[in-house]
Length: 164
Image (tube, rainbow, N blue to C red; front, side, top):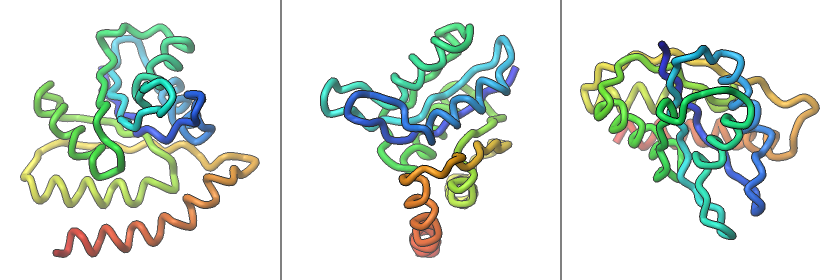
């Protein structure tokens, strides 16, 4: 049995899953085996109906695969990547989960690894992560192009935060 974590991505006003998030969810579906658990991370709420990213992600998965609801864990408080990792670590501790397979976009992975490394180091946590990335959209998506450009600057900013 494997425990996966899927990092969320913003929803549109109609709760439609963005293609970037769909790629992450589809990556999980390819890896999923009966009995695996998944932690869905994303707390940003839709302004129209107050649904979180993690809730909408669960609906997508339940429509696509047979997975027990008891094997879905919701992290529905985080609004950014650092919060997602911090809240995730609390869940891992509470559930006594040591080995995690994390899924995010390939362009997001370097920053996620950096944040995890530094948070684990600062909190003396003993979790073991393996990483799986979804590929860049083809054809390219406007949002993803913007994220690719922003990602380098975000990593520089995070390095400054963790050096303090």
